[in-house]
Image (cartoon, rainbow, N blue to C red; front, side, top):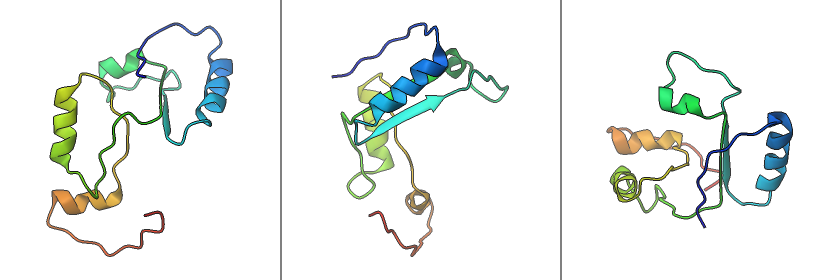
Length: 106
């Protein structure tokens, strides 16, 4: 289930604490907290949010089986938010580089 919405929160500190407790029930989650700060280098559309939460996985693109083109296709297919991370070794796919760093997490 995908829910997307924007609403006013009266007690932000209390809500953030409860949200973190709720998120612990998921294997994968992301919580982006602006701390109510706006900086000049931050795009204006992102300053509209104090807090953004994503929980669970609806789609997954792995560097083992996917590519940056797969990410482009996913973004073009849906006009939704995407959360994730890029590892340090992504540079090897973008440039002609290689690393032999240990990967203890797989």
